[in-house]
Length: 158
Image (cartoon, rainbow, N blue to C red):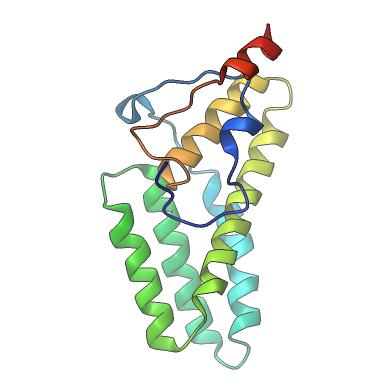
């Protein structure tokens, strides 16, 4: 599998192994407008902490990173690698540590999946579908590999 971001959410297939989802990316027409406030609530305080002495830059980076995540979630056909490269270049120009960018991205993914879990408590299947879509769009899994159950997970599900 090709991962665009190193992440603590690395073993997604095993975590949701009992669910079989094999959508094409073109079929995934879901609005993630609810995600923007979640992303904003995570990104803003982190950048405010990283750049305590420069609130204007903190706000700008917060907007850039939030817009990048929303662009990926919206699945506008933008090149994921270009968006990530742009974030890294911005960090490099500012002399910031790329690990902070990756850590922040991981926090955002965790928060989004937590919100999905809370909003879909009564529907584990819908929760798994939304988590799979987020993983696909944010580059945690690539389009070619899609979600597949392992034979062991299939047996456990039966």
